[in-house]
Length: 185
Image (cartoon, rainbow, N blue to C red; front, side):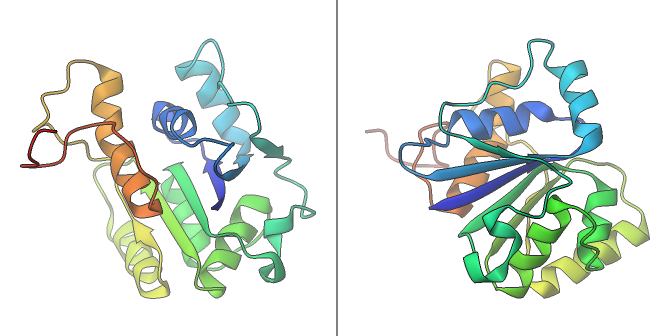
């Protein structure tokens, strides 16, 4: 698969890190776009910085030269993780002022998979209406709502319950957590 991972300035950078940790660049073509404010949140939440697996290609937010900025070179999927409500609103209304927003716009217009992982609570009516627009346009909204039936023992294990669902929607095999009521192997 050809996958774009985008990180915005919402708290929850560990979700993005764990997704990158579980996408193998030897098996998938992985590209990364980071919003301006996300860099500040990364510095706050991951003091050692974002760890990028070898082979992940990074792109400048201000550049529109990335292959996935055009529908003629459509990638398979884009994941915005975590996704701020501001980014979600700009995507919902078709604003394409930088590479991240343009790529999301391309994913929607080309009917490609766009997964948004919002990390916000409570929600306003404006945010819910933006979510409605995105759902109608074909996006998948996968809020960062962890599950607890697997009895996670650490923050990483809690985060992995959300990342596992993202990987499921991408169709990427993983063993991050047990399946609900699955028979033991």
